[in-house]
Amino acid sequence: MSFLLKFKSLEEEREIPNDEYTIRDLLNELELSAQTIVSKQNGELVIEDTIINDDDEIQLVQIIYGG
Image (cartoon, one colour):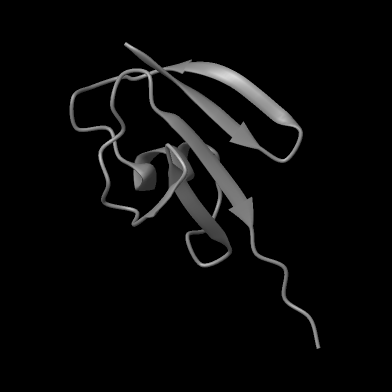
């Protein structure tokens, strides 16, 4: 089972390690903070507890702060 990860210029197929693999697990693996990332699953905004399924497209968007 695998999913497509899109983040910045990265676009790669990744394996799903277990049935309960979540967006939070992915962010931890990539050493990214949920405070600075917006997550989309198949084009829909999702929360960090969302489980990643086979053939999903997961897009991570960096939030840019400024002032």
